[in-house]
Length: 220
Ligand SMILES: [Zn+2]
Ligand SMILES: [Zn+2]
Image (tube, rainbow, N blue to C red; front, side, top):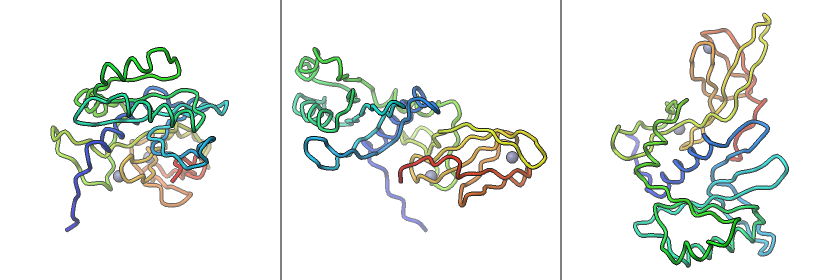
C-alpha cells in the first residue's frame, strides 16, 4: 500500500490559484500561465521562486504570489513581496490571499503595478472544481468529494490539430496534471485520455498517432 500524505492547504491554494489564472488568461500565442517557476533576481543575482508566472509574448511578465495563512496578510509580507517583484523585474505583482490587513492595503494603494487579490479558500476551491474542461489525473489518488481537498486536476494548456496519414483532421488538447505533472493528450475525436510517455502518443480507439513533442509544456 502506498502511503498517502495529505497535501498542505497552502499548496492546494497555489494549485487552485494557478488553475484560475490559467483558465482566465492562458492562450497559445498570448499569455502563458505556469506554476512554480524561477527567475533570477536582477538586483540580488539570486534564484527567486515564483508561485505563478504570467508570461507575455513580448518578454514582459507578472508574478503571482499566494498566501494561505490562518490570519490576514500583513504589511511585512506585502513589503517582502514588493522587494521580490522589483528584484525579478516583473511588470506587475499580484498577491492572492483570503484577506489582508488595512495597513497592507494602504501600503500599496498608490501602486498601480501591485494588486492585492482577495480570494477566499472556499470560493477558490469551488471555482477550481467547476473548471469547464476538467479531467482528473488517473495516476494520482482520487480525492473524496466535499473533502475540501483539491482533486488532481489536469490543466489543459494547448489545443492543436493535425492531419493523420489518411488526411483526416484530428484535434487534441495537451495538458498536465497539476499535482504529479504527468502530461496527457485528450483525443477530441473519442474523448480518450492518453498519457504522454514518448514523442508518439497513439489513440488506439481512433488509430491516430499524436506528436507530443510538438508542444513542450512544462518547465520541469
Ligand atoms: Zn497526477
Ligand atoms: Zn481517440
